[in-house]
Image (cartoon, rainbow, N blue to C red):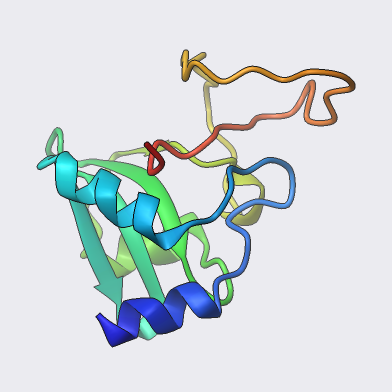
Length: 129
């Protein structure tokens, strides 16, 4: 637990475009309430990732907690590789990766006023309740 607290204290934003408020308790509550979410510590990347184990050879990345956000390829390799598909549920600007296809997802969130990420790929992590 001390390791996770330390990573959250040093956490860099997972995206510089769009993100949700950062609160470790919400992150862990979401992970605890959904048995399909796995929290994986990647010591070589000094990162904690929340992934969903749904289908073989598909990496579903829900969130990254790290002082420096690693690339999607680095995360996939640290998890053992062998993935054919990456589904990212965070804005991909810091993952050194662009989705082949952006699939709209209704998260129930709404924006008011000028919306800066318009025309860019973005996603809010589901690791909040």
